[in-house]
Amino acid sequence: MKIGSIELASPVVLAPMAGVTNVAFRTLCRELERSRIGTVSGLYVCEMITARALVERNEATLHMTTFGPDESPRSLQLYTVDPDTTYAAAKMIADEGLADHIDMNFGCPVPKVTRLGGGSALPYKRRLFGNIVAAAVRGVAGTDIPVTVKFRIGIDDAHHTHLDAGRIAESEGAAAVALHARTAAQRYSGTADWEQIAALKQHVRSIPVLGNGDIFEAADAQAMMAATGCDGVVIGRGCLGRPWLFAELSAAFTGRPTPTPPNLGEVAQIIRRHGELLAAHFGEDKGMREMRKHIAWYLHGFPAGSDLRRELALVCTLDDLDALLARLDPAVPFPDAATGPRGRQGSPGKVSLPDGWLADPDDCAVPAGADVMHSGG
Image (cartoon, rainbow, N blue to C red):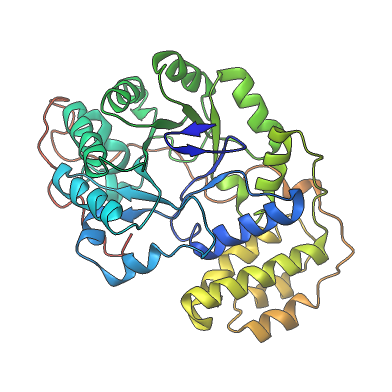
């Protein structure tokens, strides 16, 4: 798959996930792909960065833009609501060589984001959406940095926006679009509607269309592409606690033998490596606090015992992690129960929007306060 100047040996993209796809996780995914199939062939996107915080050189945000020394291409996702800030952020990325690819986030369904007009609420404002995409493309003009755009089906079943968003992104110079085949109202619940990916593919003809939603195995990715005609797949929750999934996906798409899933001993080694990478990125204390959520995902479906799980959920040091992992039975094979949905799912709900948001889809006013993110991302 080719996205602008970027050529990928397999049509597989790691979805940016807040608090997950930092340099430690991306490095681990790449290491496992290389060790299991001999190459790195997909695209690994860092967690979402707020354009305003980047332009203001927020310390936490700049730390989030860390890439590994051999990481290529370097892919950065921007959250933004303002064309002017978008242009400044994109130009900064280009001028300072911060990344090789910019993805634009218009898919976040979190109420604190949508109630201010950001994330998956914003594509409803067609002119504003187009102005933002155009600003990003203009910011990297004269470089080979492609700009891509990710969005959802729409706000809810009564307000679909994906076909307009795809058409607008294509016309404003985006190099590819990706659709999470759920509405904002669905959040992460229910079933992804792959038929909407097929509809978008028919609507957008000159650039790649990627599909996202309910891919948990290599067979799911192949099924999505066969059913929809999409050009590639974006993997989110399916890789939580399974960073080796990208090796399996790449093997399926490049005709290599499928790697054998790891047994519990191998998973313990992967957990240890993940902890080491997090400690190097954040420092040991914060790195181990970040590691706790990953451990629960890694051990999903394995017989580990409630006492050991509880202790691992409180791990504070790499030495503690080593001692606790040594108590796992290394011979336990990878369980069938460890496949399928994981991570947040939740329930559908009404989407929080600014007052009067649905009154005029052609209003291009920048929503007030929607680009202030206190986490740095």
